[in-house]
Image 1 (cartoon, rainbow, N blue to C red):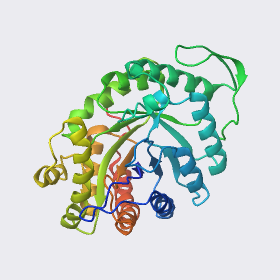
Image 2: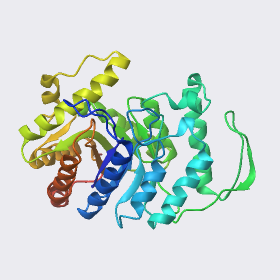
Image 3: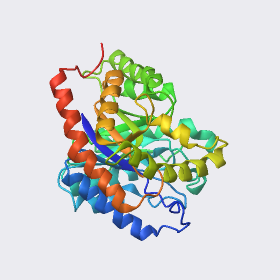
Length: 351
């Protein structure tokens, strides 16, 4: 199993202080986090795209390119690229460039995004939410497969055999589809033969098992062999003990999620609710290294997934704490998970 980290580079005020986070400082810290993740042997680092004042990254490929020069092995992916409001030609060019700079380590995780600010910002109608993503994903895959593309659609000017450059080292450059709670999205990813990143940030993980099965069934029905990979993406944080992990993480998580909750009408997250989510059958990978190992293995029995990505900085945490969490994930959790799965003889996918 590949194990890694993703982040949205939050700029929420530090809990208890009210102090604003400097975007320049946050980006410098982020590069250090990616460099450390590479050093401790993690497999993937993902960076999300947002267009709000409480996040530092609106251009993941730029940040990942900076990280490419400070790393040698770790795969570098968006998490996600909001493809619905972007230009697939430019997305392909950005990540092909990243692939060249990184020596073939770039990936694109395409999604609809969890916020809507990018739609009016780039001149798109929210009413076209579904058709925008479907059309632009089709074009992105055409660009990936051929240097010269003839294509026409509803939301972008046509291409008449024009060449798109540069071409990446990887042939093809990986494109994942990020899925939340939409079954049709899981079916689309499987039908297209694309790996799927399934976000589970609340509720019982086993309730999401049908999405994994829909993805695999659709891939098999479309004749894709092998069946494309599955990633489980979730919130998490690791400290020496489970109590310390919860105590350090909760204030930041609550501040960030309750701010978003006020915008969307969610009930506030209480400490009781948060603690329940850190239990074995909860969605959050917050705890001691051993607790996180047990939860990854527990979910592997449900999903037989190929990748696990954890978002440590759900809210603003001190940089030193995030760095320590990365060390624990790379030095203690990842080796234990890999050893357990190697010794179990578990098949990649359920029958």
